[in-house]
Length: 167
Image (cartoon, rainbow, N blue to C red; front, side, top):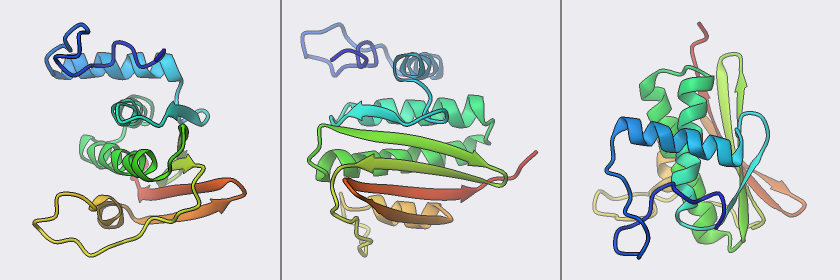
């Protein structure tokens, strides 16, 4: 699929092997994702509802949080993790061909939104230490300051907000 090329592939797929992970390689992949899809801080970015789009969304969130907004590394890590969780839910549960990612910066706050065409609501479930899945909304609840879901005429927007210290 156009736009996802060169952003890393599993080995053994008959395609060129992915470069080993390093901060420089990941930074380059983030910039390629930004160039290919645009900035979710400027307008909603639509991505195909495929597992590999989670990596693209993480890279977009990383480049926006670190480069455009200059958030501290720890906060950036939390933002990237929560983006991954919301995107994972959209890919696994929405049954759609595409989803949207949007990031907003306000004085003292950031807001991240993932839009999909499903009206099925995410559910905060109790999590046990041995659970291997189902932790997404639990993590969003624990790491964000606020989160919620806005029902839309054709789907929903799941979002989280985090406080940030303005410099």
